[in-house]
Image 1 (cartoon, helix red, strand yellow):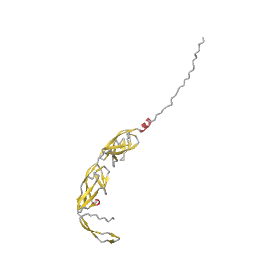
Image 2 (cartoon, rainbow, N blue to C red):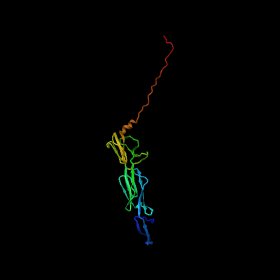
Image 3 (cartoon, rainbow, N blue to C red):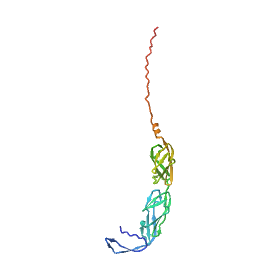
Image 4 (cartoon, rainbow, N blue to C red):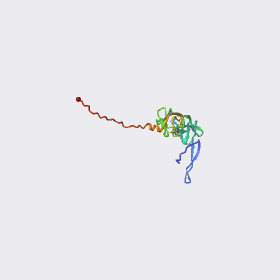
Length: 232
């Protein structure tokens, strides 16, 4: 290890190093009392899927500051909005929550974190007709007030009539029988619909075939008509 010492409580302690069974002379370490614990988080406006690593500093009575991020206990007001994964926090679903760090029994300042909901969802590609027996893969994009878009992590797909068209969890729609169905996708607290026509694939192909016959031409031979005087 680097040999860095981090104070966890006020008081004195003995510290030494050991290598290959040989120990150094002990040193007396004096740890000052903690006057404040500060949670530093610059971006508190998040979107579902955003991840960040907060930093926590402990202010000592003598004016020194120590990074105690690895030693704190975390408290999240609403784990459905924000969840901890190791040293990172990941925004889960739209909403508000408070994040607080506790060091040596002393809580930090609480930071309000907001996970934004998108204005709506876009469905790609712009396809509204699928022949029976064929399939099309659709994807969803979440659009936000500033005009940017992101890909939702866990969109939910469904159709209004699964006997006409089925859809997988990945958004692949397979046409089963003719008719009209609604494709529905939900993600990040919002949803949208796309109307799909399921058509007969064989009739569609036949309608594209145009059979033309070569035109026939009739040739008429005209004999010149005599213009001389008639004999009597």
